Image 1 (cartoon, rainbow, N blue to C red):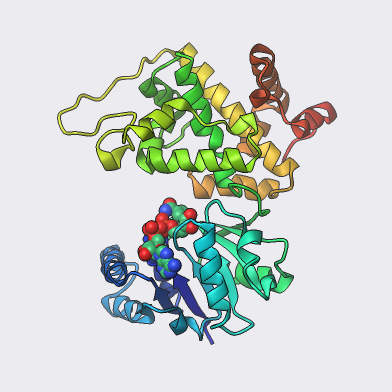
Image 2: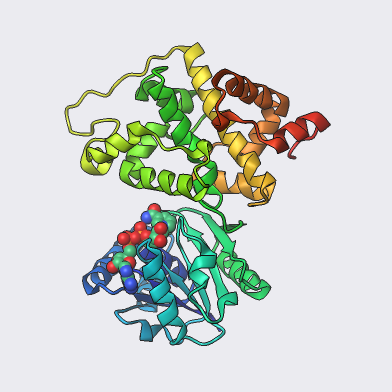
Length: 386
Ligand SMILES: NC(=O)c1ccc[n+]([C@@H]2O[C@H](COP(=O)([O-])OP(=O)(O)OC[C@H]3O[C@@H](n4cnc5c(N)ncnc54)[C@H](O)[C@@H]3O)[C@@H](O)[C@H]2O)c1
């Protein structure tokens, strides 16, 4: 019998996750404390399903079956028959604690209790449970219906059967699953930090403007969007908050230091596309800013950001956050990088990467640029990642 899935929070993520589960044949209970949000979610799911019907992915009958599989409920009690519940509410630990603790009194002792948190510790979320071996992180990417990656994060309390059950289930939903340690930013939100941070730093040093840095990353790197276009797309408020939270969570490691430029843009309300202005302006009639296509400067910019990204990917492996394969999968399937960073490092030559980082470290004398010990060890031993 197909498992019954509960989702708490019918916002951006929760409604997408509920739709994915319903599309895979599950009966889903989607709960939100805000009744109007439940209505919005229902309309959103229906519109999203309409698009899938137009694309030929589902028939009209299948659409109506899938939609009738989602039960929109306003109270936690309705989640009592669930086998797995994924929480996707506001990113506040005290609110998550209250919800998990109330939930445990309602569901069976076998029900797996998961969080879609982007930045909070799964161990801490689990601390609100009596039976904490069934807590786990199941981190979808936005939009959950489209993005293939799901990070699975066992906490120190999580038992093997919970991990295995969740892996099998989420894979059966057609998602690409990676397993990672319960550490700040998990894989993607940790490894991707230099894409934004180093680009901002390069801008702050006056080496190039936003458009030129974006051009360098798309032209030389094959990234779909440059860092400033992407930050405007994500929202400077959201992206800055993630950077600051990762920085704090890493005990203020200078590798993750946030940027004043982004902070000021965020403070000014220049969030990006959603407010009509971020690093760029989006009002109609505004001329697009042309990059200065200097091949030499462009290459310097691209290589500097890339080696910083690779250094972070190496650290995730060194610190056993995830395997080589999973780190590369996470960046290609979670944020559409053109290549896995570790495969890219092999291709460029680890000694070339180490040289670039060592030059930056010598020039700046800042801990931010310190080459990872695993990278040094691998170069010394002539090893590769693949
Ligand atoms: N938005 C993203 O890109 C993204 C990506 C991955 C993970 N996440 C994580 O997913 C979670 C949800 O994010 P979102 O962007 O969907 O938020 P959102 O603001 O769109 O939705 C949150 C929903 O939770 C409801 N809610 C709040 N408190 C509640 C409670 N106590 N009980 C029941 N419902 C409650 C709200 O009414 C709202 O509808 C967060 O933990 C976030 O870190 C977000």
